[in-house]
Length: 415
Image (cartoon, rainbow, N blue to C red; front, side, top):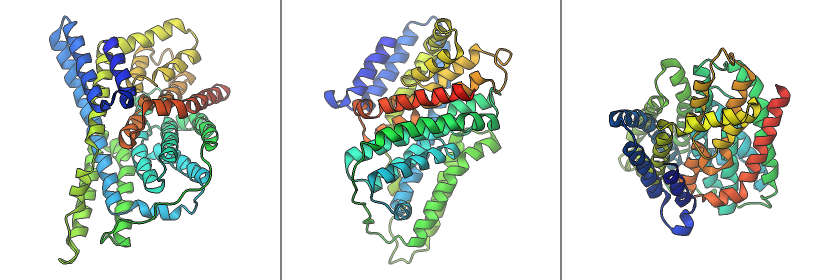
């Protein structure tokens, strides 16, 4: 199974060389991992049960992603992002990178790293025309979104898992991880600033449409407000996040329809919501599905848990163990890795708000930035903007790794 996974991984990272779409490779890899697992299993019914359990979780993530993409596309169709672009009164590339980074860092603590990456990637695509500048900015968005999600109990799935498991409390995680997360963002930002030189020509020409300024404001504020509402919906109802996202899509759809019906018959045109649905990047959704299926197979077979136990056996030091988990999360999904660690150590060993749990929240949240495929934010950006694995590895990974180490050192010093 590991051979199948890493072979598929190689095909994904070498997409541009072999000219085979990574979505197809990811789907084949995901299915073949489960085929390998079930052919080697003694209890076929158990494997099928595990598969359906994971499919329900994966479906929730995919519905969440579909909803977020729909909202972003609808805002874009109403030229809502133009309002934000108009407020960015700079043509300096370095200044823009700082603004985008800090905005991503703050937004991801309220939204989550995946939604933030989608929104900010859409925004930067409206501003920068040069591909290299866009890629660097999106790479920094991934780092900032992952770091910003690590210090908030609702900003990252793993942090939420630790909060629900009573391993951390909201106030404690904010106080202890905010500074390391900020360091893990500012260090790579400083390094990547040297890659951004000169000024850019802003893409300010709006699409020719009947969209009024009032409509732009209504859709932008409603869309972003509904995205911010999603994590609070989860806290209030205890329903999965995709339910809140579907509610958000439905409400924004309703707002769009009401605005559409108020137009005069001479001005009326096809509702924007259908155009938004058509613009969703389905190959990215399928790529996401394939990756999650493959990781789910590794989790169900016990390979990821075995990796966590191996780390525990090899590294008797808490810092080395947790930092190793962070490095692993650059390759594997951090959710099953954190789940495995939660199962290995109980609250009697490490009580609530122990340094071990706080460090785990930081490392698992920020370690995924080292590789573009190591986090939901990275995978989403990879699909939307078609950033290659090797480009990210050459240009972003080292800065992300240095930031990770700097944040780790800050966590240790703060205790």
